[in-house]
Amino acid sequence: MQSALSYRPDLIILDYVMPVMDGGDVVSKLQENSFLRTIPVVMVTALVSNREMGSQGSVHAGGQLMLAKPISFPNLLRSIEAQFAEAS
Image (cartoon, rainbow, N blue to C red; front, top):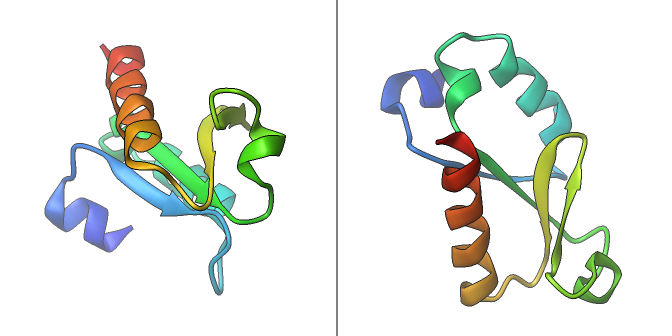
């Protein structure tokens, strides 16, 4: 949270599985802040495979875009572009 407030990123790429808080908890905290809630978030996870994610290699879970690891650069780029398109 403090890093996002200090750096004011245009996009946050966030792993779902982390120590202390999972990615869903972090997104919930981001949503509580009026500035941070506008930052697009792409979550990544190793909990499911690309095959389970479907043809796009991504799904929306809990309102957030989620990508399966390993992430291909074209899929990451497509997902980032989609997040910015949704934010516009």
